[in-house]
Image 1 (cartoon, rainbow, N blue to C red):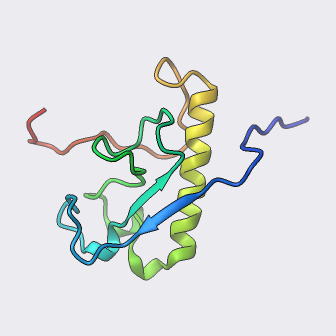
Image 2: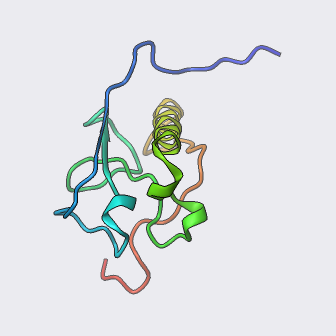
Length: 116
C-alpha cells in the first residue's frame, strides 16, 4: 500500500537558545532543561508559547522520563523538535484549529489550580 507522506520540501531553520537566567518561566525546572526553541514563527500551531511563539515541546510537570532534560543530550532535543514540526505540519494539513489531528502525545495547557 502506498504511503503519502506530506512534509516540507526545504530545510527548516530552528533556533535553540539556552539561557543561564531565563526571562521566561521555567516552571521550577533547571534552566538547562527548559531552553527556548523557535522554528517557522507565525505558523498556526496548538503547541506554541503564547508570548513569543516558541515551541511547546513537553509539559513541565511531567516526570523526567516524559520530557527532555539536558542529560539526554542535544540529539534527543533535535529529534523532539523534528517530531514536533512534523506534528504541526500534519495538524495544519488535516484542518488545524478546526479538527486537525496531532499525531504526538499531548498535555492540556496550564496547570491545575492556576487561574484561567
